[in-house]
Length: 209
Image 1 (cartoon, rainbow, N blue to C red):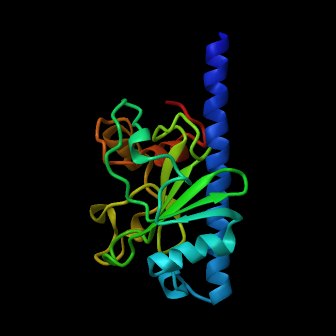
Image 2: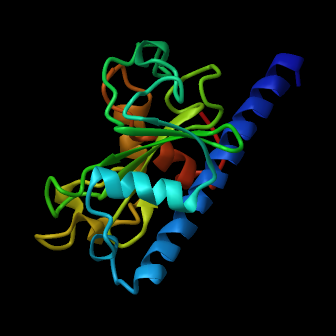
């Protein structure tokens, strides 16, 4: 195995290790959030606004920098991010931005108020903050937190088992995650961020792409 290959494998492993760490923290925080409020789901517990989402991060994570609604300097600028296919990102959806004690940048986009049939919160993670490579699917990922506390990739209404709550379709199937990976993560779309996290879940926390 060549030195460049070894370096690439090391980088992949380091990105996934940090992502997995944040994933575990979010999962644990979600459970604690429900327990602290004696609630059966996240909406009932009070995760129902952008401010509530920001407070969720500040209460359960070790935040060392709060950039508020400003993307930088917690994250790199939108124009500095690219997709794996090489296209530059043109849209940034996250609303509240933070840096954690370990250097990870994390952001939230509360979306649960739009409709009851979607996820509650998008959790944006740049595993090494402003540092490169700033590529979606390498060091930048979006995880989706659902009303039932599950973190997964983006589920759609058509996959739900009932007419009111898309969280009934999560965890997503292996095929659904693979479809998102191919159609969005490695596509030329400059506005889609999903598909990469689900692929990591499918491949048992390995970056195989």
